[in-house]
Image (tube, rainbow, N blue to C red):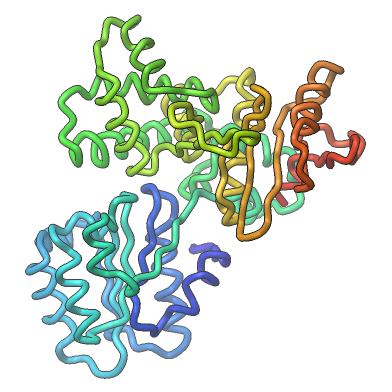
Length: 399
């Protein structure tokens, strides 16, 4: 059964039957294929005949023979030549087709069909392809489930606290909802298999990595140091302690590859007083908590970092540009911007003592502008305000 991801449908709907290519990007298993199927269901309910809808899934052996743009062109034209009226073309994991953009652009130019494509690589629209398609595509990034969506998938909209523990432990990948939530071994196996698939198919094979062990060590290091300030040099130094030599330039390339495969998100740091981005230092988060569990497991001691990851993902899902802040050498977890809207966020597990309170609220008090400032924690009954800074129960923020 497909569960409606309404926010994404709402983004795409205005562009249906418009002469632009609808591009849906995101990591594997985040629901891109399901979103295509939801759009197909919608079209059928509106009276579009099945023969006018062509769906190609490059992860299926049924379409293995479509390997180049010429194969794609021949296949599509052979299937639609007898149809009449508006046609709809859906291509899943289009990056598996060599020079796919040549055929797709031709289909668009000839008004052959309304076109929807998905891809698991952020460089699907490379600078060259973006130039070719400029003004002729609309891109939507698909994220793992928000907590609100997770509750919908689990069909437990009122059991927020126990389900939040599951969300934190297992992440928000849609495929989880088909597994028994109490079978930790099965879930861990599923998540490990997914990490392996992305690692080998979207990294090792795509970029022809000659030292997969070094890349694997880097990924484990990043997941283990979730949300910590990181540099390519610090990663190189760590690898040296493991008797693995990798140059800083190679590590920079590897980070770029991981980001392109949607395995990680790199968060730039901004000096709020100097009004400039810091060129070297950044914070790195896995795309989903489930990826981290699949690779290095789950530990209660990491709750603070996992909460930070969940808030970061939520801000991105809501459409904010997010970066980390610094003020007087103090860390601001997130600066969120969307249009003219801007606010600052600190995330912590519990505001248990004066030291923690001073850090979370005190860092924000150092910022002298008038944009809203927010502290999120798992303290359900903490006062809602402190010296003009709002506090909110983290689960309430997610809902």
